[in-house]
Image 1 (tube, rainbow over the protein chains, first blue to last red):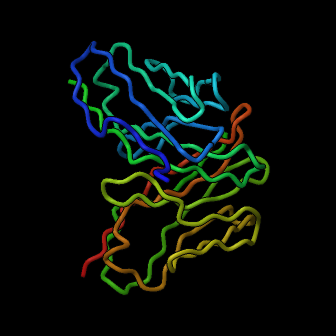
Image 2: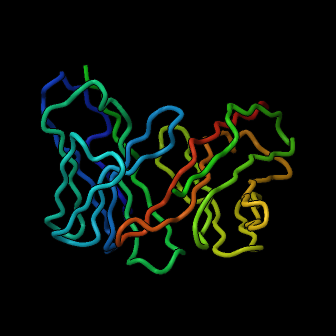
Length: 115
Length: 114
């Protein structure tokens, strides 16, 4: 049981390049999330998904796209990377919403540097 | 909107010292409250949580009590160890469209000296 895994662990991009971050979970969770973590700002939600084939915008969605073609995978895409997207990206997943008692399970993170 | 405010770090303590990390929140309704911990080079892990007023969450010697009257959820530990060095995030669960969303504080870095 690997939990939540993320690929790659670290990546350097040049401005304007594109890339896709992969998140995979083996816990059969319905909900998946992408966050970015910046110094002094905690975690901010980029996009999330409430089930296979569905996605929705979070707090800071601009410049990112996502897809949830399979229940266990949640992809985050950057079409044209900008230096402002330099950050650490975390994926998380959780069970179906159960009131407000939900716990999220996080992956180890992807460190992205955009030059 | 909902928000979480926690004390700024870094916090540096000697081993076996008493730890308090303050956390206050603003929320409509009755959120659940969480403490997550991030060890160096790793993702966030749930440390403890409380789902209603006066509940006490506890784990690994850490405790936090959900205080509705003061809108607080302070994290405490009686005797810290070097292995407790990490970043600690206070969080609450809110509602965001149809999904449960967790709102995080900015994090408090804790360093423990041997």
